[in-house]
Length: 300
Image (cartoon, rainbow, N blue to C red):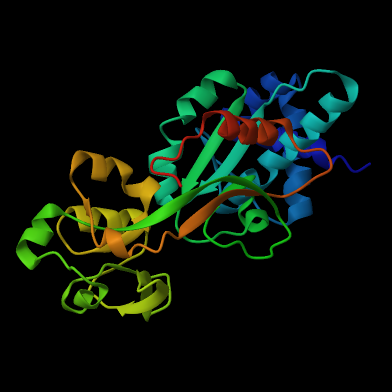
């Protein structure tokens, strides 16, 4: 009889304990039963998952990949069975969240300790990256996206919206002079993003109409946080979400540039997740937590 789930449990116990004996104790099995389960699993996969020596046991590269892939799956199965057999729907298990660097550092990290205190059974894996990831491929439960959404078939929960602003450091403006009209940006260092189109434009409200003005600069950053830090260091003028630069504006590290020409545009912020008829309690708990506790600095 195929016992794939049992073999997955054995493997995860071995990976966590670092030994067959430890896994056997945790699962209340004999060490020989654990050894046989591992042998069947490796034979079926056609890959060696653990490297054994007389003194230690370690996961191979294939073992680490398999562990990352099946840990969430086993937690899901456990949760489904608990939900069918009992009223206990306490959030537990691994929760993988992917966010942009600015949103993660400015908005998520300050409140995550509170989530941990409310849901101690959830193990939170947070990855910060401005590169778009595939939720299924990366096995992420939730991805937070800023800006227009693509039609991905995912469920989206709107978390808020953030207005945009042009900013620069007081030191840069003292050295280079403050622009008084969007046309003056031609003589300034405009900080751009390397992951967007190579010819950038910024929108401005000029004579009652929104006009896209091309901008140029010798610096390109691969994340909003890199661009923000460059602006704060006096490297040029940047266009960023207000939630990202609110603390810098308040502290005077950055000041707003050309506020009279700001078109008032904004970017929506969403939490994306794979929609199931019965959403895992740990995912539902995190979305509810964001509803209750998330505050966007400088939000529109």
